[in-house]
Structures are given as structure tokens and as C-alpha cells.
Length: 52
Length: 217
Image 1 (tube, rainbow over the protein chains, first blue to last red):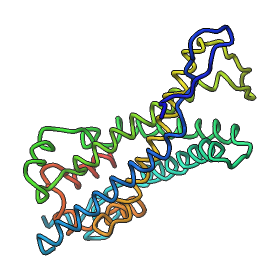
Image 2 (image 1 turned 180 degrees about the vertical axis):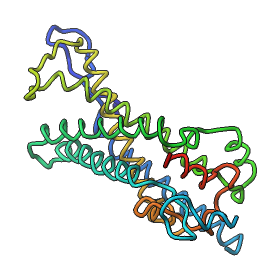
Image 3 (image 1 turned 45 degrees about the horizontal axis):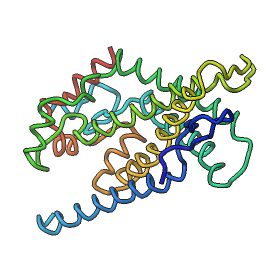
């Protein structure tokens, strides 16, 4: 998956970055979900082992 | 500890001022602005087509003013250093979860730092991007930068927006956790209880009474 959206130069030059690739949005959402689940599991685990 | 029962602000006994009204208003204005900005930029990409541009740039200006207000508050009225990472924060990491924090924990400071970078990146690039649209105040001038320059600006703006989605998800999760509810309540009502203050904060690191008096002065 590409990081950037690119446009080919009309003059035949190399590709030009025109912005971020918004297909990556799902990965940013997934990163948030992973952080949340990891923290929730950590808290549940430590709660069970500390008796709090 | 008895003096904590009589805060210098107009709060009832047993309550400690954590966020003043101006700062709570800033937080909620910023939250609304960021959600509108993300919605007006990402929803069209996801297929929900509507006239988003005017809503987006005007909300961006609102966020810019709000952030400038917050920076002024932090520098002139709040305890600026309360949000800065210090050596004690790093020692607390080694002290385990029972170590009491100052007004903000290391995690909160890191979160604030990350969001600050993302918001400022979004604002900075967004203000520059205003040159590419017609507004009642100016006509567009797309030749300020080369194509590569504009591409870099748009890329930074886009990545900041997507990273903010991650940060907002995490923020809402912590705001809804029962063990963090005191902090969420304080962002609505401004206070935590004296017991919460004693249980979670080191009074040497967050001198709430003195801070409230300083802010009132």
C-alpha cells in the first residue's frame, strides 16, 4: 500500500506527490482499536492479579 | 490537608478546581471543531458527498483562534510547566502504577504533546492551503508553491488528520473508562473531589490551592 497519492506529470516527468493516501485511514483506525484493546486487556489482567 | 477543604475558588468544600470554565470551554470548542474538520474532510472521501469546503475552512479558522486562545492561557494564566514532561515523570515510570502524579500523568503529557503536534501541523498546513481557494477575503493563488511543495503540504495535512482519528479514538476510550471518570467529570464541571486529589496526585507536584489562587490573581 502506498503512503502517498501521486500524479504523473503531464510533461512526462516523474510522479508528483499530491497528498496522503487516504486508503491508509483504515490502518489509523485499526491502530486506535489495537491500542484500546491492548489497554483494556492490560487493565483486566492487572485487576485480576492485584485483587482491585 | 485540611486546607484542601476550603479551596480559594468558589467551589463547595471538598472539591478541588482542576479546569476553569475558560479552559473547559476551549476544550469543547476544540473538540467540536476537530470533529467537524475531520467529518467535513474524511466523509466525502468515504463517499458521503456534500458541499464541505466552506464548512471546513471556516471551522479551521475557528480552531486556529481557539488554539491561540489556549496558548495564551497556558503562557499567561495557567501553570505552563504542569504539562511539561520532567524528570519525576520518568522516575514515576519506574515507580509502578502506585506512583502519584502531578496535575497530569506522563501518559497525559505525552498525549497532549502528540495532539499538539498534529493540531499545529493541521493548522499550519491548513492556513497555507487557504491560498488555494477563493474566499470573501482573498482570491486563490495556487502558485505560491511548486507542485511538489503543495504535495508535501497536502500530505502533512492528510496524515495529521488521519493520525488525529487514532488519537480521538484513544481519548474517547479513556474518557469513558470508569476509573478515569473523575477526569471526564472535571472537564464538564471543573472539579475533582479532595479524596480523588489525595488518592491520585502528589500535593508537592500539583499544589492545587496555590495554583487556583495564582490563576485568580
